Length: 516
Image (cartoon, rainbow, N blue to C red; front, side, top):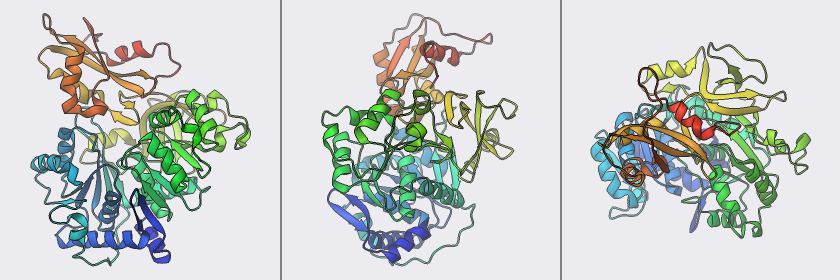
């Protein structure tokens, strides 16, 4: 990926690489700055295999730092700024972060993070501060960097998932994995040969992986600090954006804007969506507003970007782009498995099931992670006989399209973000008034699934739903805090007294055709 980026920088140094309101950096400038930062990391004593985190909202210099981390052979730790501070501190401590990049607005939080993660030896501010920040620091080092020769299994990316037991797992992707999923994304999106990608979704998630693929392809990235609907629509028109990724909730916000139909979207070739099921009604409206550019995708943190794709052509009958829109059954699918994965539907004994039969989605591919960081048990559970078991329940139809209908595990996907019930339950169970609780995902028009807590109180104690939500917010952040809470006199339990979370969840999905 770095080699491909450098090839563009050598061939077209003045080609715009990063754009934002107020500035542009071309490929030559980004290459020089990323080389300076990589040299600075080595001069500061950091070696390949050590870990660098970028703790920032979308910011052009944050992307330069990601390139520099990879160039230097360090491991990129994406750190979600929407997480609760306590969670980010736990991630940095557990993964052994060595160097941290951050914007000045996060200075107070960084002090807390550094105290919690003593392995951090260097913190570099992206913005200008008293010492000048990143760019002044980087000027001390050479703009040329001797390319590293790294083995294919060298660790390049370590992404935190939520933990089913409240402890985050680290998903390990090697140099070869990054090469595979960026190349796969490039091969699946060829209609805009020289892409202009709008980075509005967080670069800590799928949006960041797509940025790497676009840079590999020699494209331009337009950086927005947040997915503001009005700014997104203006940016598409102003920068002639050809490609962007948004979770369904953000697309719904675009469609809800009263002036959504007044902008020029003619440059768009791909409006990629994923991370959660999309409302078929809203998808039809999006095709009407934005044109025949919708592109659905299915992937996981463990297997990014390229497990299945519902291409723009697949949204129309007979694959005729811009023709009659396809049936609801087709639009509700994830698309066909891509050429870059082998995909099977398996039963509990890992036996392949026939077409149309529901089972767990299992895949084998170069995009699949190496495993979970320092967690061989979880790795062995997920990857068996070379096949990654996704935990998603689905089936393949007669035309080869993948349909997801449920999850084998209890993970919630709310607005495209993963939430593990056990993380939320631990916080609620710490309240002295709570005897037990079950956290589940429930249907929600905006979020796809909303986090709901069903709570059983200690006899004689009083605690309101509002008080429970208020207690969760500072420890869990906005994404994981329950959107609603119900107080039940008793929770359903097994004969051994264990709360049956699935039974609680089923009550809210009883009238639905699928359970996600």
